[in-house]
Length: 384
Image (tube, rainbow, N blue to C red; front, side, top):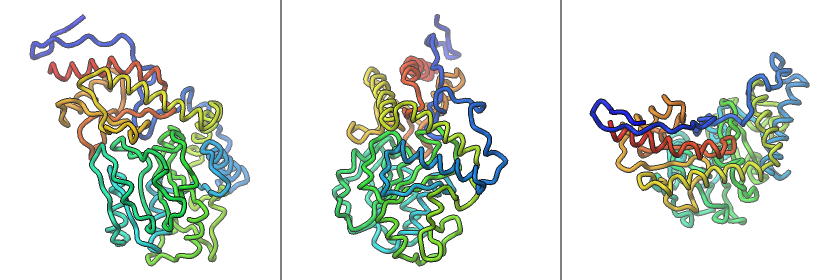
């Protein structure tokens, strides 16, 4: 069945099948399949996070993250304030200044770390940039410097292809903002000195909390370097001249939301039921492949990241032929109104386009069901 638009053009028929879970936001992302608030453990709610129960649940969450990340014993992992931003800035404020700094930027969040290093910490960093959809020349990086980068550029759909460009004998520290990468890629932890992420990305958890991972070289830096600037209380990882080890054993710096912790535990237990990190990576790969097939079949749709080797498998950014910001707003609005896809407009600072999350909490069948709806919305906006 077709119908006429106000302009007299023929509007396309709507597809017969909606995605069962039309949650394609790149953060907060879709909850794990089967999630409901009634399934969360609640015994820790209303209790002190410093009670035996509270600390046990926090430690259990840390242990699950270590297992699901295949994180070696050489690396510490702790829950900190302020989402991924807070975790990454904690690392910058506590460890930078000992060496020159290089910052890599090819999307909005990488540019944020450039701003922090240059304007807030006044470190006069070397900045290596690339435009949206592109990856900088990684061979230009001087590893006598500390190096800051995003493993997966959430707002551009561009990622580093692997860890081969990070030398084992590096003098500086590697700082990886890995918030859209962990649980979706095989991270070479021997190449990572500092990594940060938040639960609301690949796990589909709640926001407000960050996770900080420190390798042995980062711990050594904390012990040997005193920053030249003041440190807020929520950034302090040293206590009486030694690393505050309790932070990495469930004793958080400030009060966490135990409800958010229980939500993360639910997601991590779900991940474990899939077979661990391999299961999560396989789901993300399958989702990205399904979206690739949709893109390849449409001449009006393309990847913002042209090179498959550096194309994100989680926050997939797409270009729509001839589309400006207004077109994309109408496009995404139609999909949301029909309950076909929520929150798929590209990031506000990125070129006009779509951004579709393909992380593990999304079902491949829902990606496949999205294809006809993209056709419908594109034709509907074109028809006016």
